[in-house]
Every structure is written in structure tokens, then in C-alpha cells.
Image (cartoon, rainbow, N blue to C red; front, side, top):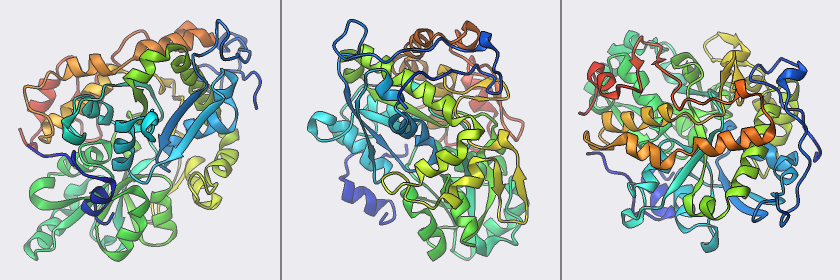
Length: 447
């Protein structure tokens, strides 16, 4: 079974990875463009900590990685959505890597770390099960909200521009075989082992008949080192999120072979999750954070706000990236670096709604897919009770309560924990009611 880096320090992890406005806000319905009064929530006044309705604490420390998935947390802080609900002391702390974020949530804010924040799935589940923690210590966590969909892709080094590597990687199978024969195996990188960036890379390769374990070399590199590693030739491909894909194209370092939006439109991406002990001790504060995040997601999904969003994210304390690198992808203009420019807002990063699809609610069926992929690739044993893990970690009920408190229309508050059957770009389907059938249908896997 594939092993996780569960007993490494921050320094060791990086080496192993390749050196590596206050006030009321109108809430829109699931259809972001709708302005009907029937689709708006009632304005909610600010609350005071210590009041009967206020949160138990105003303080929480959240970690983020500088990719577009973190935008709702940053906007909720910058635009006062957290403070509106009494969370006036929310620290949003940049993490050097996912390994560092994992280490910091292990010790918690009381030990100088973090209480939670932005996560790739299934990291909260694996931390809860002690699969990626020091000494395999179980540190229960709760997933509370899906931060976004899309905004990710598979970037390829420019030297392979004429190799025909695209969404259907089968067309470039000869390139993979040649590199392997020359003992220069195609090196595919991602930002943390056993989590969504690796799974996007593995799924893409396997869908094209490329066995990632037999025909490629897999490498873990922090997202901030994406550009440097492609430029120096340390890797041939990188699975990562904006702003790095456009930075790669803009600097003429490489091109985009596939967007995750093309692989699985409206796919689950990254999540807001907290230590379970913090949530259990602060249920009102947790819902206050969720209400602030939901409002922030709706603000982020208004394309009229995207230029301001680019400006906020560009700040040194957040992404430290030029606005010009952030603006086009946020507005749905995606340069693939191949001569093709996609202009489609439905393929851009989305936070609240996309063509009527609710994106914030944390469906248990999505958690289950990530854990099923963990089984597929040997990170979890085949007999693992994945549904039991999901039921312990996923707290969609708290999202529902927060949404009700906000006065969202009932039609905008999912009552089912499954989004139903999901279909991928290669025609494969995942039925959360029968994950074993999904596993059996896959030709390339470890189990």
C-alpha cells in the first residue's frame, strides 16, 4: 500500500517533495444572475460576541494556500463577512505547503498552529483516521463547506508542445513509451500525495490508458514551486490551480493539456474544514464562519466583482501575484498556451453556483468519491468502510443550519447528501450508491 509522509517535519517534507464592508449583504439564489425578491435572503444584522445569539468566541486561526480555492476565506476576512457575524478576530494565515498545513492543524492554534481552513480532499478524513499524521495520531476533523469548483488543470512543460498531449492523453502514448525506454520517464507532479491534485493527474493519465505507476514518475512539489520546477525541467507535468497555470502560459514555460472543468464539470475541488474539537466547543462560532463564507462565495461568484477579487488576491500577504496574471482566468478567459483561448465563464473557477448547480454544500457523495479513489490507488485498504469515515467527518448538517439562519430559500438548501451519479469526460460514471461498481469498471488501478 502507498505510504503517506506521516512522520516528517516541515523541513523533511519539503526536501522529500522536491526541495520542495461590514453591513448587510444581499444573498443571491442558486441562480447567480437572478435578482427576484423571492430568491433573496433577508438582511442579517451584525452580532456581538457574548450576546445570546453571538458566537462563543470571536477568534479562530485559519490556514490557506495561495491558489484560487482560498478566495472565499480571504474575501470573508477582507470584506467583513466574518466580522458581520461576530467573528472579528479571524486570522487567515498563509501556509508554505500542504504538509505544513497538516503539521499546523495537528498542533492546533493553542500550540501555535491553526484550527483548520482550506483543504484538499480527502486530507481531513485522512487526518481524522491518523493516516497522514505523526505517529498516526487520530485528530478528528469536520468538513463543513465546499470552497469552489474548477480553476485547476494539467500543465505540461513547453518541450512537449508538439507531442500531442491534450485532454485525450492516449493520443500521446508513444511519447510516454519513448521516454520510459530512454530511462527518462515522464515526471508528473502534484502538491500533496493522496489528495485531489494527485487524483486529477492520475485520473487524466489512466483515462488515456497510461498507468501512472508503471509509465510515469510521480513527484510531490509545493504549489508555489510549480513554475520553477517546470522551467528547470524537474517535472514534465504539474497538476495545480490558478494562478499557476496562467503563469506557466504567460511566461512561455508550458501549456495546459486539460482543465479539470473539462474532465469533470462542477467537480468538488477544495473544502473548508476545522478540527472537530474546535467545532464541538464553538458551534455558534462555526455557523458564524459558515455564514460569512457563504456570503463571500456569492460575492466571489458575481463576475462584476472579479476585477476587485483579483486585486484583493494579488496582495503580498495573499498571493503576491500581479493582477494581470489573475484577471483573465477569473473572468473565464483561459489561454491554454496552445493557440487556443477559451472564453467561457462556466469553465472558470466558481464558488456558489454554476448553471444552477449548488457548489457550496458539502455533499457526502463527493467525500465518498475521494475515498474511493484512495482505495483505487492504494492509499486505503480495499475493505475500508469509507462511508463510515464520511459520516464521521462530513457535517453538511451545520451548512444547512447556517443557510437556514441566513434565510436562503428552501430550494437553495440541499436536503440530500448525495448529488447523484457523476459522469467524467471519458464516459466513466460514479454512482455513490455503488462505489464498488465504479472500482470494478476501472481498467487501471492498484486493487
